[in-house]
Image 1 (tube, rainbow, N blue to C red):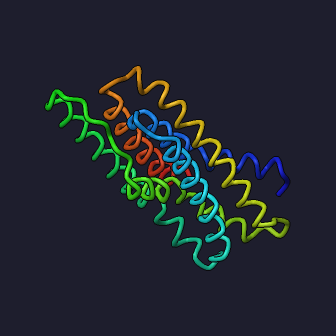
Image 2: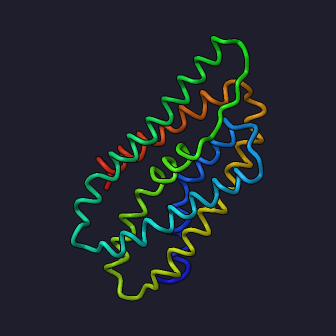
Image 3: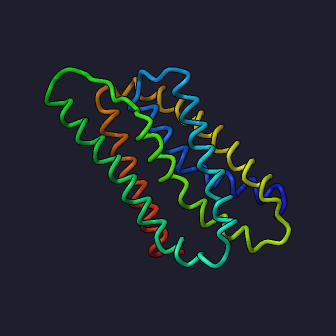
Amino acid sequence: MNFFELLLTAVGLSMDAFAVSVTDGLCCTNLKKQQIFQIGICFGIFQGVMPLTGFFLGKAFETYITAADHYVALILLGYIGIRMILDAVREAKQKETEHYELSMKTLLLQGIATSIDALAVGVSFAALANINIYCAVSEIALITCLFSLTGVRFGRKFGAKLGSRALLTGGVILVCLGIKIFIEHMFFS
């Protein structure tokens, strides 16, 4: 696998993390710089660790991993998204604006949910003879971190314009992302 192919793989893997980062930026208008970096680092680490884990698991477990990854992503993203939608409905009823807080637990769940696909990619890396797995996962982690940081900035810019609808929009995006991953794996892989 050459550098360009690996770059395209890294960009492809980082798209889910980018979408969730945009959602975090939309919904969490009071994020501090430290939290923004935590989002990028968390997603980058998970996107790097999952293919490394998949690589070492190898072909022996490939069918089990690919058989369940879409269910895990659907459940985790659906849970977080539905919780955000319910919070938005509750907030609208209360008439007072509360800020959605991004807890470490939620961030870790997002990191896992967006990187499940990378586990299967790691398994496929095990079949390649010409890959330096440590360079590959480092590139994937770095690209994902950068895309996630950009996603949060993008979400914050538009979150201020959406106001109280940002939490609802973010929840709908996460649920749709979970459904998209599920449908892709069920019908198009």
